[in-house]
Image 1: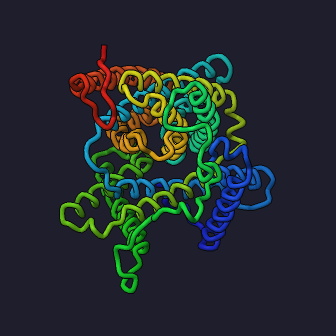
Image 2 (image 1 turned 90 degrees about the vertical axis):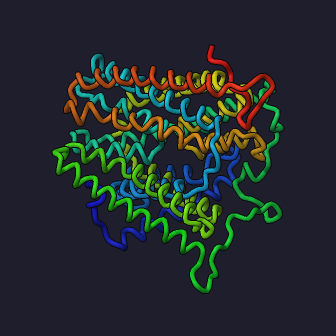
Image 3 (image 1 turned 30 degrees about the horizontal axis):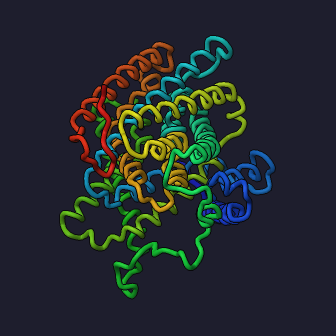
Length: 472
C-alpha cells in the first residue's frame, strides 16, 4: 500500500513525463542512426531508460528526478499494461500456447532454484550479512520483467528487505541486455547454420532502424466512435482508467476481508499482486462486453497501441528507477545469478522446445529465451528476425502462452514470499521454499507430460503449432 500513499506534485509528475518523452525520442533517433543498436535490435525504450539512468542523479546529474517516483510509475504502469493485455481479443484455444505456458513456468522455477542456491552460497562463503531473498528476485527480474520485480520487491520492504525493488529492477535491466545481445548471437549463428528457413541474411530496413517508411505504413487502429461525440482513443483510455479504479476497489475489499480474518501480515503481498487483480478485472470486463454484444466498440488496434504505449513508459521508468549504489553492494550475487540464470534458461527452453514441438523449434527457442530473460517485446523482436512476416504460428503461440503461464505459475508468486512473510527471513524459510519449488517443478512437469500425451495427434496430422512430440 505504501506505493499508493506516496504523494508528489503535479509539477513533478508533468516534469517526469516530459523527461521520459524526450528520452524516448532520443532513443528512437539513436536506434535509427546507430548501427550497433540496429544490429542487436535494441528497442528505443531500453535506450531511453539507460540514457536516463546515466544522465540522471545516480551518475552525471544532468537531469533531476526522484528514482522513488519512477518506481511508483512502474507499479501503476504494470497494472495498466496488464489491463490492456486483458482487454485484447484472445481468440480460440491454442495447444502450442499451452505448451509454451508450461515451459515458461518450468523456467521460472529453475531460475528461482538457481537464485536461492547462489544466494545461500554467498551467504555461507562470502557475505554473511547477505539477505538470501535476493535469489528469489532472479525469476521476477529475468522471467517476469521489471514491473513484477519492482512490485513484489517493493512489498518486501515491510519484511525488512528495503533494497529488494531496486535489485529486482537491476536484474531486469541485465536481463534485457542478455536477451538482445546473446539472443542476437544465437539468431545470427542459427542463420549461418541454416537452422531457420524463414529469413534471409539481410533483414528489412524498417526492422533495423525502427522507422517504417510511408509506403509500408500499416493501419494501427480504426475508429469505433463518431469523433463529434467522443474520440475513439479517449474512450479506450477512459475504459482502462475505469477498470483500474474498479480493480483498486476489488483490492481494497480483499484487503479489508483479509484484515477481518486476521491476515494483516499478508497485505503487502496482496498489494504487490495488484497487477493480477487488474488483469483479471479487465478479463471479466472483456468477457462481459463480449457476452452483452458491446465488444464491437473496442478496436483491437487501439488497445494494442495503448498497451504498447504503457509498456514503453514502463520499461523506461523501470531502468531509471534503479539504484546503482544498491546494485553495486549486491554485485557479486547479481553477476553470478545472471550468468548461471542465462545459461540455464537457454538450455531449459531449448530442451523444452525439443520435447513440446516438432515444427519451428529454432524460432520458438530464440523467442522464448529472449522473453524469459527480457519481456514479451524482446521475444517478439527476435522472432521477427527469424520470421519477418509472422507467417509461422510462433509469435501468436508465444503471446497467448503468457496467459497460460500466468494461470499455471500463479502459485510461484505466493511461494517466493514465504521466507519473508512467514519465516521472518530465517534460513529455515528458504529451505522450505526450495523444497516446495522442487515439488512444484515435479508437479508442473507431470501435468505437462499428461497434457502432451493428450494432445498427441495421429501421424501426419498437424496443427498451427506443429505436431507434438511423444513424451518418451
